[in-house]
Amino acid sequence: MIICGIDPGTATTGYGIIEKHGSSLQCISYGSIKTELFLSPAKRLNKLFNELNKLFRKYQPKIVGTETIYFFKNAKTAIHVSEARGVILLAAAKKNFLIKEYTPLQIKMNVCGYGRAKKKQVQKMVKEILNLEEIPEPDDAADALAIALCVAYEKDIFKQRGENE
Image 1 (spheres, rainbow, N blue to C red):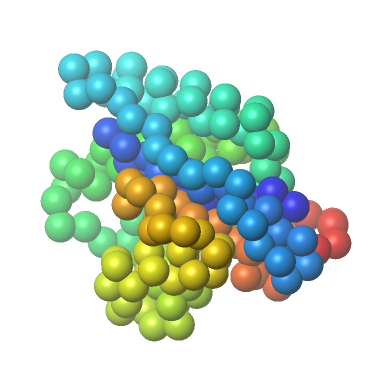
Image 2 (image 1 turned 90 degrees about the vertical axis):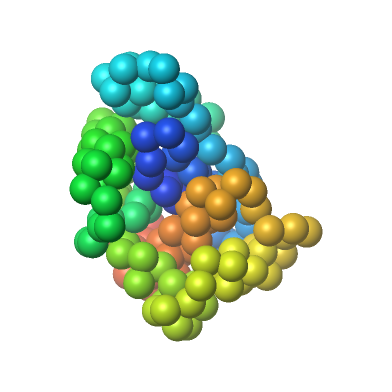
């Protein structure tokens, strides 16, 4: 089963694609979708939507996981990230993918076993779990792979899709 994790952002949206066979996990791809600062907000969101659709066509995931926003330090940033999340949810819903959402605390807990883990700890665990040679870059891609791992660790997720692991 192909799983796509997405770390939302307007300037940079990270993605991570993994494949799960039973208890085996393999990293297929990761990276980021970048939008140019000089574009209007609407054009940036449109570019994100189009790039997500290309990604979904290429990898054909069954499930998409993304991060929720549950608190923020900067209202302006939270609004832009929320807009990107809306585009991500729309793109995934239009493909009829199962969508799973996780708080940062849940992601850290699932990947590191500790909800207050630091970003570097999460990145190192992603590298170890997926047997990667190096920590995925940019940070947004490592975060997206961590989100994909959260989906993979959910026991009942495959029953929700009516499929076997």
